Image 1 (cartoon, helix red, strand yellow):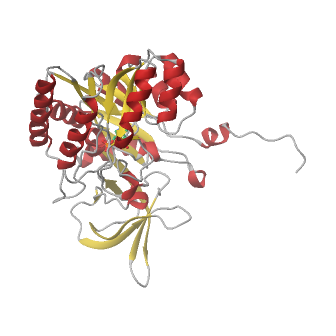
Image 2 (cartoon, rainbow, N blue to C red):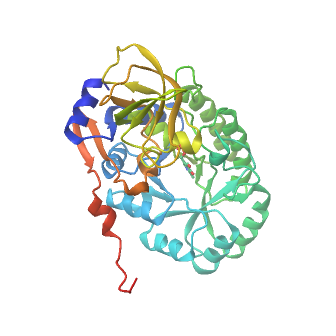
Image 3 (cartoon, rainbow, N blue to C red):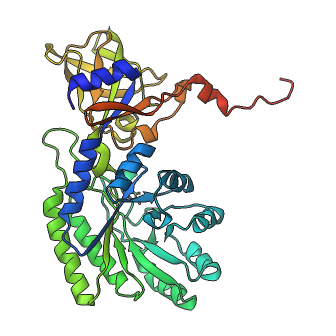
Length: 402
Ligand SMILES: Cc1ncc(COP(=O)(O)O)c(C=O)c1O
């Protein structure tokens, strides 16, 4: 993606802007699926990372399924023309009514607690289900995205599997899948191998299981020198242990993953305009026409995103604090070295494909930015910029005397 393409997209669709590169997404999907040498592989793209309909259709065209965590994500997936069988619904702490809606829609359901398992046993015993296991493994780039440890709210404890067996036997249930997801941004891929050993010990207990899902957590690089999951070598090693398990069991299971970040993080760019360069007694601030309402990862996760001045890439390098316009501290980067920034310059954040647009809000009554897909070298608008009318549309003026 060159600066001229991004600058032209901003000129046409204004700033701030999310820009995605379809060729990078295709390449990520190809690399991922080619890494695993197993008989049956299925990817369910985790659409919480980036849920634009055009992006979802792109995944569908490549043969991907969809991982959804809310009934609304399921509806978006169906709107993108995924079939219900291609959607795996992995919610947590939802109501029975929401499960019932998912059953009506016909998607595959991943159960992550014993209460729901009993409910399904009593009310839908023949429904094919997945069981989400909590393996009690600590993994993930930070506490907020570590979800497979003993204190995590996710999944059914590996120590409660005898209870799962009892319930599923009593109601003659169809446990078709076992699922584990330990976190995002996992530094050491060995954790997948450890989780696999535990998951295999669960799978052995259920003859009905045909699908084994290892969730996601593949690490991407945010800056030069960052560790990232080498998917080719991981895939080779993991496939070996998976194939050995299949052989031991004398059965062909489908190997499943549900990557989000790996698929779209490096395919996205977030571009914002410089409103103000402000010198204070201690530093120089760059004030952008955006804030954590549009790009929250640096503030929420302490995430590092590379920032480039695409309007003045050859300028003299200076040290800046890059901040937003929100009415509280919203620092994108502190003491960052960037080519000289002038009022009006466009700054481009890298790795803005995953968990950026989908985590945006209307805080400070700011409309959310547009999204653009660069496809075959041309920019295509795939979500229009919100307007003030959109923000006001859901408000109801109460007929009361104030
Ligand atoms: C159940 C589940 N699957 C998949 C993912 C996607 O993870 P990642 O974006 O790290 O690939 C997540 C992320 O939170 C998740 O909770």
